[in-house]
Structure formats: C-alpha cells, structure tokens
Image 1 (cartoon, rainbow, N blue to C red):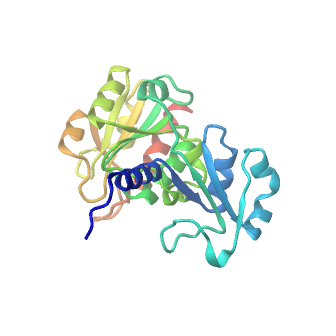
Image 2: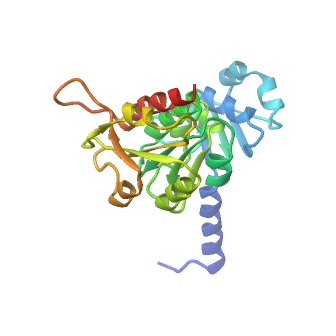
Image 3: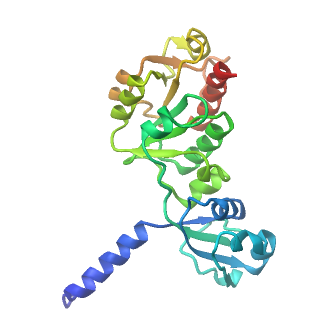
Length: 263
C-alpha cells in the first residue's frame, strides 16, 4: 500500500482534531435549551420539517443560526444508531464552566457540590446534573479522564440541565477535593459499607457548612485515594437485608438530604 503524502496525513489529523472539539446534541428539549444558552457556541443546526415546526422559528432566529432542513429518512448527522433525535440536532462546542474556585467556592447558589469518582455512564451523569440543578448545587465535578464527557446522550438525559448546571472536569479529583476542603467544605463519601448514616452525619454539622457529596462508580465505588481524602464515609440506609441504589439515585437522595441543611 502506498504511503499517504504528509499533507494528506496532516489534513486527516486536523479533521479528527476538529471533530473532537465539537459534539452533536440531539432531541427537541436538548436542542431547544442549547439554542437558548448564550454561552453555547453553536455551529450547525439540522432539523426535519416537523421538528422545525415544533421548535418554532424564533428559537433559532434568536440564537443567530439558520437550520438545515433534512429528510427524516436520511438524517445527515453522525449520531450513534438508536439515538432518538426527534428530528433535531445541533453541533456545538463544549461549555467552558471555569474553575473549582470560581464555581464551587465563590459561585452562586447553595455551598453544595457533587464530586464523581470515575462515573462514566452518560445517562447516570445526565441524571445527576438534573438532580444537582433541582437541589441547587453549585457544580458537579469529575476527573477529565475516566468520566463521562459532554455527549448528546448525556445532554438528552440531563433534559436541559447541561446548559445550566456547571459540570467541571478537572485534572485530578483528589486535588479538587483538597481545594474544597481548604475553602471550608466538608466532604462526605458515599460507601455502602460505611458505619455512619448520611442524614445524622449531616445533621451534626453547624448551620451553613459547605458540603461536598462524593460518589463513585457502580461496582468499584470510591477509589482508595478518594476515600482517604473524604472527611467522612457515610451510607444511605436501606430497609431490607440487601439493597442498593444506582449512582444517580444515590446522588438524588444525598442531594435532597444535604439541601435540607440550607432551607
């Protein structure tokens, strides 16, 4: 096989790099909320005629982008098979949310943060973003590697929360945890084998204490360094002899319990 010319290789690399810097959001709700977000860089909007009618012209006119009207039988967007796009897709750049200090420590909202240790399922992370928004958390923090990146599937599960709820992906989770602790946050790691229950541990805190909830991936749970960095390990009690919650449900229960401290 003949070797490709250097300029062809460079062009292919540039194309791959450019593609990696953008993502496709899909589904009417996710696309509508992204169009309404002034912080979101929007590159290409593809709609079927039916989806365009459902969104309404004002939706994309105010966003400053003109849609491409596509045949629903030949939807020209590189989505995974089985993605329920509802005839709407928007190519965008990932959001830039800033630093742990600017969002978790000094940001608006309750002094409450969620930290995810290698939670890679985009559906779980999307659901956690929804819960974090509902209960007023300042941010959801995850490591840049071995965590769910922004994807269309995550955005669709988040049902618009991805556009409003800060999702910070940091170089090192333990370092981010230490930064929060230095700012006065008390970090509670969720672990099924912990002896202390979450709610009494939260109730023992002085009013106004900043709280971080640390959750690990289903199965492995928290890594050793993450566990060691937490101030307390706690569990969500269950009624039966056996029982467990998936990570997104555990996050919702924990956020509800923590949010009560600020009501």
